[in-house]
Amino acid sequence: MQDLKDWKRRTLEQRKSFGSLLRQTHPECLFVVVECVRIPQTHDSFFLLIVPVSSSVSTLQRALRKNLPFRSSSSLFFFEKDRMLAGANLLDQLHEVQASPDGFLYLRASTVESLG
Image 1 (cartoon, helix red, strand yellow):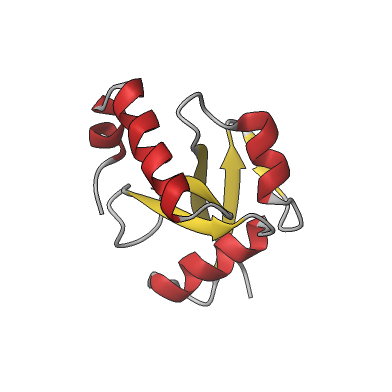
Image 2: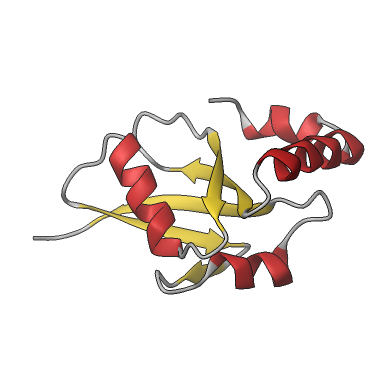
C-alpha cells in the first residue's frame, strides 16, 4: 500500500501513462483507486483495483472485505466525492461520468460500526 498523497504527487501525464500501460495489459477492465478512510489497520492508505468492466460497487465491497481485517459489526460504504454509492451501481457507468482525466475512477471507502 502507498499513501494517496504519493500517488497524487505524480504528474497527470505520469498517471495517464501508467493508465495507458494498464489498459494495454487489461483491455476489458476498469481501474479504480480506492482511498480507505477510517478503516482499521489501513492507515488511510489506498488501493489500486483492477476490476472487470461489468463490476458493481458491491463487488468492490466484497473484495475489500475479503482482503482487509473487518469486524463483523462494521458496515463498509463507498463514496464518490460526497455521494454515497449503492451496491448496485455499475462501475462502468460511474467511470463514464466520473473518471478523472488520468483515466482512473477515484472512490473513498469508509466503515461505520453497526449496532446488533
